[in-house]
Length: 113
Image 1 (cartoon, rainbow, N blue to C red):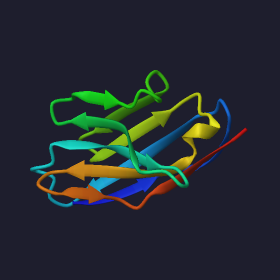
Image 2 (cartoon, rainbow, N blue to C red; image 1 turned 180 degrees about the vertical axis):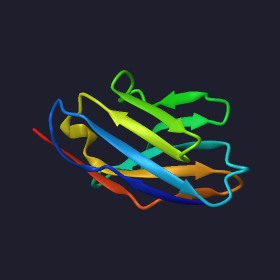
Image 3 (cartoon, helix red, strand yellow; image 1 turned 90 degrees about the vertical axis):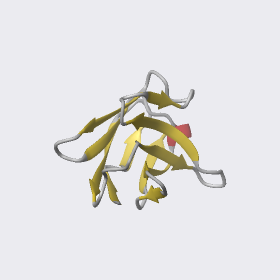
Image 4 (cartoon, one colour; image 1 turned 120 degrees about the horizontal axis):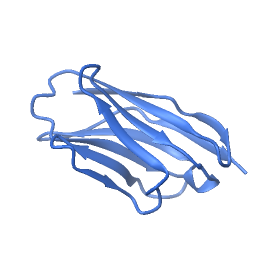
């Protein structure tokens, strides 16, 4: 499984960004996909996940602001981020789990105050 994330950038407080994660390879056994983030000096943390059965989980800090979705035909997972604030500044990583944890290269999101 290979993951390619895109869509990061610089945005002002209150703005929006949409991240995309293109998935390739053998995804037959992938049961969960999602997004994690790592801010400077902090540990990587869960942002949102979506399971094969469409069970969705969000971190409390992003509930009501972020939306995870996927397009199976395009093999892409999205993260729509609204009402961004400086605390959302981080490198965002796409993740997929089958028997292993697969990570894409991160995409940097910077929210200016």
